[in-house]
Length: 249
Length: 293
Image (cartoon, rainbow over all chains, first blue to last red):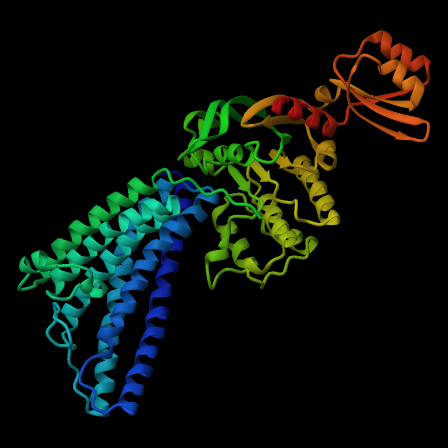
């Protein structure tokens, strides 16, 4: 690798590293928001909290993970092309970034359960869960990290090809939305039957659920690997010759 | 340094934006890309900068295919009317963030020069790019393009929103950059009269096709402006292809197109008429009107 190629590679590495800095910031804001909502429920309701507010807040976190993927191809890719980089240079670094993102995302999602547990303990509230997961209790930090790493990976990976597709041609984006939902659904169901994130009510997931009556980290990891590889393939097809939009004024 | 365009075609669905265009520019120098609205100027520049892939044909930068070639794309900087920068990068979406991104991505970025341009164009560093006026956006684009010191810099009407003093400051910077750091500038514009003095060669396009490519002096010699008493001007220019005429009292100025007969030139001289170069703008209007017909 020439020194110029190394410098360009370093520039992209720095860009993606700086994107990871946003993860704790966004999730910290979400934690504070969740705390406020739980506090209001405690004050205005019976005062008896029985389930994790962070589990419900993870819906918002999922959309954030998807947005990170969308932003990568719909905003940052065109920006770097306009600054003299190639699509291949940028997209080639994207899978590694998504791995880093998913790991960081999972760390702060796990931290959210930990902090919530401490607060619930202080108030004597029951720290229960509403849905089935790879983790049975909100203090099973290892499985919690694994589940959110898988969810962060599939949501952000799906975001990359959806972002690229909408940037390229809105109709193509719309066409690929069901594909993205299916990929995400496969991972969500494999991590916790009966619960397909925000898409639970969208359709009949019983076929997928029957394949995962007893969710295991191995099966969920396999489902995620398949979905993420497929998402990366679609992302490449959509963005490998992405035309930069004409703009005026 | 050079740009080669070989039989390039670009289509948007059913619209042909660039239609089998072929030309070569050899730098350093300032090259004008002239065309009417919708003539394909922006599309052509987007091909030169690898923003788009042509449907057919080939674009070469210094002999290398430009599309998806880092060795070529790193040599090119395209600044569009609304510069491609950090406007969607909240919270890092301010002018200083735009300059910082360019400093990280442009291999020849000159920070001291950028600071000088920011001061000259009175750019507010702490304001979001989206909050800039059109003129300030133009000034930001010009700053990004000049300070990048890319061997091939393309300005796509990027300075049109700037006020006259800023535009003239930009023209001066272009000339001094060409002398101090020789490279290729391609300037697409409507303000032909303003920039014509800067241009070495001119490419005129219309409806996606190349209408003419030549040195500016050669283009200006394709006709003449004849000035003097109206009766004498009319006599000397009778039978010639007239592109335009203006009168002030008994004095008339007529722009004529075509190879000038030496006898006509002699006759004009004897009649005391002034014969000058054909203004580029008149030639442009004539050629593009003819092309449309």
